[in-house]
Length: 179
Image 1 (cartoon, one colour):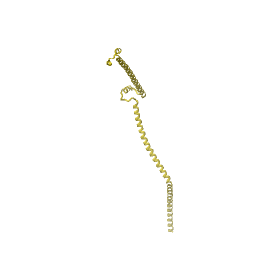
Image 2 (cartoon, one colour):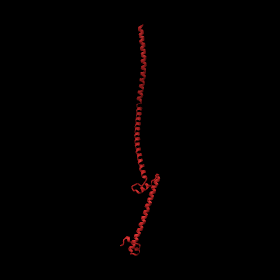
Image 3 (cartoon, helix red, strand yellow):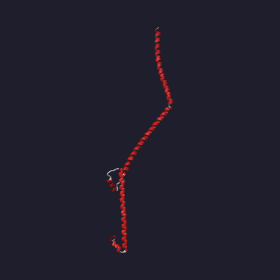
Image 4 (tube, helix red, strand yellow):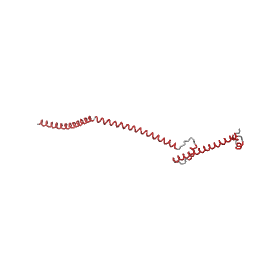
C-alpha cells in the first residue's frame, strides 16, 4: 500500500481504484479540515475582537487612560480576571461591608441608649406614681409642718409678751414693796 505522502494527482488519475478512492477521501478530509480550521480561526478572531471591544467599553466607562497595555496583558494572561470591573466590585463590597459593620455597631449603641432611656422613663413614671400615691401623706406632713411653724411663731410672740409682762410685774412688785 502506498503511504499518504505518496498520493499524487497523477497517481490517482491513472492508478487502481482503491488508490483513487483513498486520494479523493484524503483531499476531501483535507478540504473539510481546512474549512473547519478556517472557521475555528475566524471564531477565535471574532471572540478576541468582541473581548477587546468589551474591554474597550469598560475602559471608556471607567474613563481610564493608557489602558491598552492592560488590555493586552489581560488578553494574554489566563490567570488575570477577565473583567476590569471585578476589582471595583471587590472594593465596593469591602466598603459596603465596612459601612454595614459601622451601621450595626451604631445600631447596637442606639439600642442600648434607647433601653437606657426606657429605663429612665420607667423610673420617672414609677416616681410619679409613688408621689401621687403618697400625695395625701405629703399634704398631711405639709399641713403639720405649717402648723408647727405657726406655733413656733406664736411661741416666740408669746415669749416676748411673757418677758414684757414679767418685767412689768417685777416693776410693780418692786413699786408696791417700796411703798
